[in-house]
Amino acid sequence: MRLAMKLDWRIVAPLLIVIAGILWGVIGFFSTALSSAGLEPVQITVVRCTIAACFLGIVLAIFKPHAFKIHLRHIWVFLGTGVLSIAFYNVCYFACIELCGLSFAAILLYTAPCFVVLLSAFFFKEKLTAHRFGSLVLAFLGCLLVVGVGSGNFGLSGFGILLGLASGIGYAFYSLFARVALKHYEPLTVMFYTFVCAALALIPFSHPAAIVDLALNSSTSLVIMLALSLVSTVLPFVCYTTGLAHMETGKASIMAFIEPMVSLLIGVLVFGEVLTLLNVFGVVMILCAVILLNLPEKKFFSGAQAKFRKVRIFAEIKH
Image 1 (tube, rainbow, N blue to C red):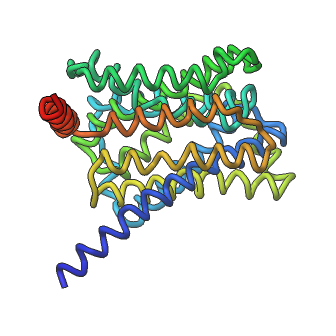
Image 2: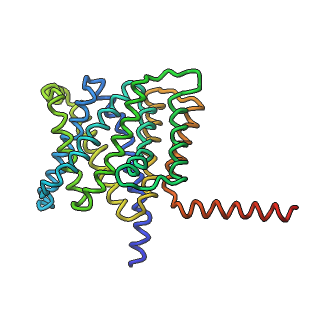
Image 3: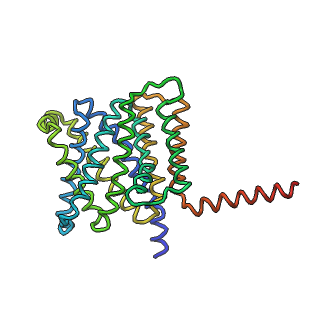
């Protein structure tokens, strides 16, 4: 029975991670629809965070009311996850989608793991090792190809590209602050206060009356708002967190790369965005950088050394 359960999680955990990636990947579909309905990036972010916070609050109130309790000394952590990360990266990401398209915005967002390495080296004094540095260089070169540098057809908005990279930095901040928060609180508590802080920070700048007016006068927009917040926010967070509890973090983050791939496909197939061969090479380079970043360093170097020894032995025999 135990073996069956173990084998079951080997199947279910990766499946949950993939589902989370797909649900996150379709967020651009909902945000583009709301943008077409007249909402600004700040307003779309407020919609996403407010509804998600309300839903999570209801869940906590029913099933885990004790999880509402937090210490005042940890408020700064939730301001970090909510304001510096979720609020900042969402606004930048949705604005980048408007300026550069969904495909490019999604790929630039996924430079986040590389920014995590740089920020971790600065804040947590983690070593910037050779294979991590190599990952950063590979990701940087991939970004250049994605945005079209060197192709002779640099048609993307420069400000849009900066917003895309800024969204990656904001996304990376979540890993840093959540790393501290999760030492003291369970995931649902962290998510709830993260979305609360993000919503409260942006509501004063979002003209909320316009959001409410759109929701009341357009049932289609209301459904899209709910889908954005529940289908592409709450549900994938739950799936990813559950799957992560039963598999390695590195493997999970690699599998979650399906998110920008789904966004890229939606951009190309639904919105008619065009990718060149250089753009595709750039995507592959960023993917390789993320995979390299998640390889155990000892395993990576031992494998490389083993291959080098085989080549050297072959050369000695040949001569």
